[in-house]
Image (tube, rainbow, N blue to C red; front, side, top):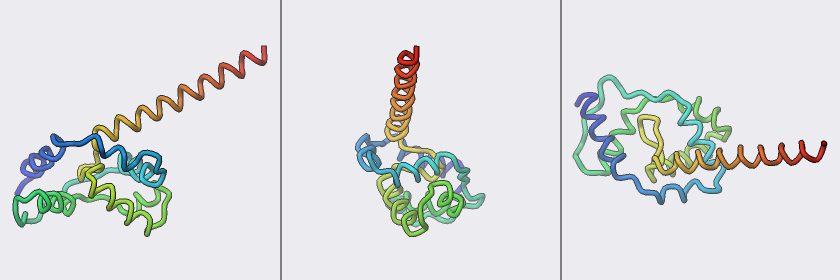
Length: 136
């Protein structure tokens, strides 16, 4: 199995994303912190991927993750959570296919986070304008 096979199998999952994944991270700071940490971490695919047991969806998903290389300790530090919390919460993100083994995110989750950031900046800008107009 080579890198092209890996990418093709991963593509199948990305083509079947569900918007409900957003509900898992909405209003959950720990999950959000881990998602952001993964989005800012280098994830690589093993140069020589292991052998795939079967073509079942569950086996393929497990195989994709087993061939992803990333620094768990770096992710824990970036997320700012304990190792125990990280392991439990990371499993939720992987199991709900919010995180992909190439370091990317479910597109609906990514869009949700971007909208949250835009609203945060918009709110901050409005407060700054109000404060500036009061001081005049």
